[in-house]
Image 1: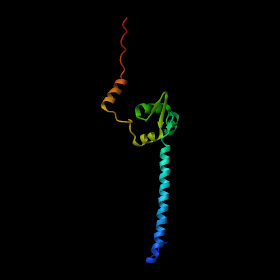
Image 2 (image 1 turned 135 degrees about the vertical axis):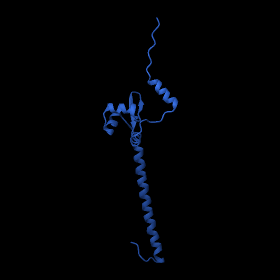
Image 3 (image 1 turned 180 degrees about the horizontal axis):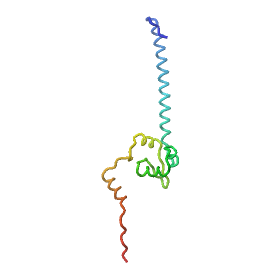
Image 4 (image 1 turned 30 degrees about the vertical axis):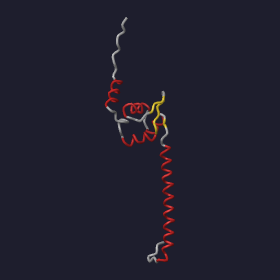
Length: 124
Protein backbone atom coordinates (compact mmCIF):
# COMPACT_ATOMS: atom_id res chain seq x y z
CA UNK A 1 0.00 0.00 0.00
CA UNK A 2 2.72 2.47 0.93
CA UNK A 3 5.43 3.09 -1.52
CA UNK A 4 8.96 3.19 -0.22
CA UNK A 5 9.93 6.20 -2.29
CA UNK A 6 7.11 8.69 -2.32
CA UNK A 7 7.42 11.52 -4.74
CA UNK A 8 5.91 14.94 -4.55
CA UNK A 9 3.39 13.90 -7.23
CA UNK A 10 2.17 11.01 -5.00
CA UNK A 11 1.30 13.30 -2.09
CA UNK A 12 -2.24 14.31 -3.18
CA UNK A 13 -3.25 10.66 -3.64
CA UNK A 14 -1.76 9.62 -0.27
CA UNK A 15 -3.37 12.55 1.56
CA UNK A 16 -6.73 11.57 0.02
CA UNK A 17 -6.31 7.98 1.26
CA UNK A 18 -5.35 9.18 4.73
CA UNK A 19 -8.42 11.44 4.87
CA UNK A 20 -10.67 8.52 3.90
CA UNK A 21 -9.14 6.31 6.58
CA UNK A 22 -9.49 9.01 9.22
CA UNK A 23 -13.14 9.55 8.26
CA UNK A 24 -13.88 5.81 8.48
CA UNK A 25 -12.19 5.66 11.91
CA UNK A 26 -14.21 8.64 13.12
CA UNK A 27 -17.45 7.00 11.98
CA UNK A 28 -16.54 3.72 13.67
CA UNK A 29 -15.70 5.57 16.89
CA UNK A 30 -18.98 7.53 16.81
CA UNK A 31 -20.98 4.31 16.31
CA UNK A 32 -19.12 2.60 19.14
CA UNK A 33 -19.72 5.52 21.52
CA UNK A 34 -23.41 5.68 20.57
CA UNK A 35 -23.83 1.95 21.31
CA UNK A 36 -22.02 2.32 24.63
CA UNK A 37 -24.18 5.28 25.69
CA UNK A 38 -27.41 3.54 24.75
CA UNK A 39 -26.32 0.44 26.68
CA UNK A 40 -25.61 2.54 29.79
CA UNK A 41 -28.96 4.30 29.55
CA UNK A 42 -30.78 0.98 29.38
CA UNK A 43 -29.15 -0.19 32.62
CA UNK A 44 -31.01 2.39 34.72
CA UNK A 45 -34.13 0.25 34.99
CA UNK A 46 -35.78 -0.83 38.22
CA UNK A 47 -35.52 -4.50 39.15
CA UNK A 48 -37.88 -6.36 41.46
CA UNK A 49 -36.65 -8.40 44.42
CA UNK A 50 -37.00 -11.61 42.40
CA UNK A 51 -34.98 -10.17 39.51
CA UNK A 52 -32.24 -8.98 41.87
CA UNK A 53 -32.09 -12.40 43.55
CA UNK A 54 -31.72 -14.19 40.23
CA UNK A 55 -29.19 -11.56 39.01
CA UNK A 56 -27.05 -11.99 42.15
CA UNK A 57 -27.79 -15.69 42.59
CA UNK A 58 -28.97 -15.31 46.20
CA UNK A 59 -32.12 -16.18 48.13
CA UNK A 60 -34.78 -13.65 49.13
CA UNK A 61 -33.79 -13.86 52.79
CA UNK A 62 -30.18 -13.07 51.84
CA UNK A 63 -31.40 -10.13 49.78
CA UNK A 64 -33.43 -8.68 52.67
CA UNK A 65 -30.49 -9.15 55.04
CA UNK A 66 -28.08 -7.47 52.64
CA UNK A 67 -30.58 -4.69 51.94
CA UNK A 68 -30.86 -3.99 55.66
CA UNK A 69 -27.26 -4.57 56.76
CA UNK A 70 -25.14 -4.80 53.64
CA UNK A 71 -26.12 -1.58 51.92
CA UNK A 72 -27.77 -2.84 48.73
CA UNK A 73 -29.18 0.39 47.23
CA UNK A 74 -32.91 -0.27 47.68
CA UNK A 75 -35.76 2.06 46.75
CA UNK A 76 -39.01 1.55 48.64
CA UNK A 77 -42.27 2.46 46.92
CA UNK A 78 -45.16 1.57 49.16
CA UNK A 79 -44.84 -2.12 50.00
CA UNK A 80 -42.58 -2.81 47.03
CA UNK A 81 -38.78 -2.72 46.91
CA UNK A 82 -36.87 -1.88 43.75
CA UNK A 83 -33.19 -1.75 42.86
CA UNK A 84 -31.76 0.01 39.81
CA UNK A 85 -29.43 -2.27 37.88
CA UNK A 86 -26.72 0.37 37.34
CA UNK A 87 -26.69 1.27 41.06
CA UNK A 88 -26.50 -2.43 41.95
CA UNK A 89 -23.54 -2.87 39.59
CA UNK A 90 -21.78 0.13 41.15
CA UNK A 91 -22.41 -1.32 44.62
CA UNK A 92 -20.98 -4.67 43.52
CA UNK A 93 -17.91 -3.02 41.99
CA UNK A 94 -17.10 -0.90 45.02
CA UNK A 95 -17.99 -3.55 47.61
CA UNK A 96 -19.17 -0.83 49.99
CA UNK A 97 -21.09 -1.78 53.10
CA UNK A 98 -23.24 1.33 53.34
CA UNK A 99 -24.84 3.32 50.59
CA UNK A 100 -23.84 6.82 51.70
CA UNK A 101 -21.72 7.89 54.66
CA UNK A 102 -23.96 9.44 57.31
CA UNK A 103 -23.24 12.71 59.04
CA UNK A 104 -23.41 12.93 62.84
CA UNK A 105 -27.08 13.97 63.03
CA UNK A 106 -28.28 11.27 60.63
CA UNK A 107 -26.32 8.60 62.48
CA UNK A 108 -27.77 9.79 65.81
CA UNK A 109 -31.34 9.71 64.43
CA UNK A 110 -30.74 6.21 63.05
CA UNK A 111 -29.48 4.99 66.43
CA UNK A 112 -32.48 6.49 68.24
CA UNK A 113 -34.90 4.92 65.77
CA UNK A 114 -33.29 1.51 66.28
CA UNK A 115 -33.46 1.73 70.08
CA UNK A 116 -36.52 0.19 71.68
CA UNK A 117 -38.05 2.13 74.53
CA UNK A 118 -39.98 0.66 77.40
CA UNK A 119 -43.67 1.45 77.19
CA UNK A 120 -44.94 3.92 79.77
CA UNK A 121 -47.51 2.46 82.13
CA UNK A 122 -51.05 3.80 81.73
CA UNK A 123 -52.48 5.93 84.45
CA UNK A 124 -56.04 5.11 85.47
